[in-house]
Image (cartoon, rainbow, N blue to C red; front, side):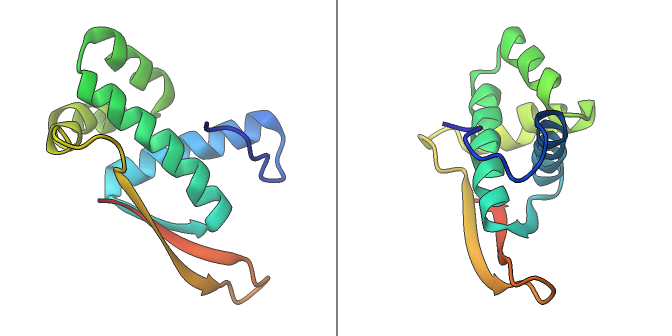
Length: 113
């Protein structure tokens, strides 16, 4: 279930960060971040792709309420979701890439499968 981790931020800042990261991941296909953030972004991205697979007006409005760019929602419903039509979950992949140089935080690359 998404939303368990607090990520050391207040609620409004955390939600804004996750919305931005989900939007960027859907727009570009992959991002580099910490492992804990990647796990949260993965859960929310999977929910957005599931909404895209449903494809009705209600799910499109729900996606528009979360994703920050209309062009990304259009891409989600027209290109990304139909490519996962035969797949039941597991739309993202997290690959650990080692510690960050500055603070030794465990880093990962999250990408769409």
